[in-house]
Length: 250
Ligand SMILES: Nc1ncnc2c1ncn2[C@@H]1O[C@H](COP(=O)(O)OP(=O)(O)OP(=O)(O)O)[C@@H](O)[C@H]1O
Image 1 (tube, rainbow, N blue to C red):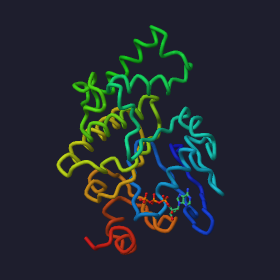
Image 2: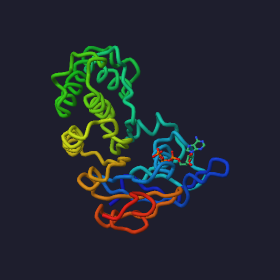
Image 3: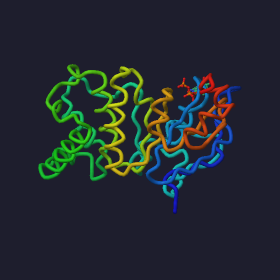
Image 4: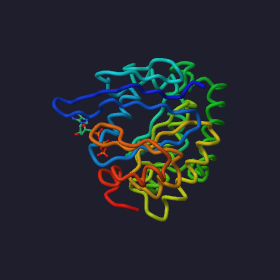
């Protein structure tokens, strides 16, 4: 079966800094892959290359067999790759529902002005409300973003990344800035919603408890290279990962 994502031998340098070297990865449909590594290990560089924000110096990236290497981010997004950022990208003066509608209009392959066509607007409103519901956000629909707690903003940002029905979603530290008590309930909501949307997910994460609980597979980066790629227990027990990534034996 064709992988959702195939990365072949990706390389990227910034002057003398090698941010990616020989990165290869096959991700089958439905897998939840966590990308781990210390600061500067190359996780964001990899995510940026997959989403088109950075052009690799070498190598190829395929989405369900189609070459997306170095296409523009908007094109890659339309082909089915979506991302959310560590800091939610929301219009803070709009309500949660309005943010969803803006995201839907932006991701609609049917045309730039379709948001304003009544029939289309009805469909989009139904989809917006469905996503808000899936993420447990229905009660916040009519509240402006300025009034929403941090964890709710994060959920809204991830819900917005699903408006275009992506095949692959990349999440940048979904639990960063979320309190210890909120982390697990939030990830339950996110992973439950992603399973129902049948989306394959790669998530950058520093919290190893979250990684252990929610990843099917963990890819560990160090100095621009992949040093381990296996199920969570195997990776977290790997001496090289303990030395260069987690900093301690379990
Ligand atoms: N635009 C850039 N210009 C110059 N150097 C860069 C650029 N982007 C990344 N780098 C360098 O490439 C290396 C990999 O950085 P990257 O951001 O991919 O790491 P990371 O694993 O995502 O780290 P973090 O967890 O801190 O986000 C680092 O040495 C970084 O300083």
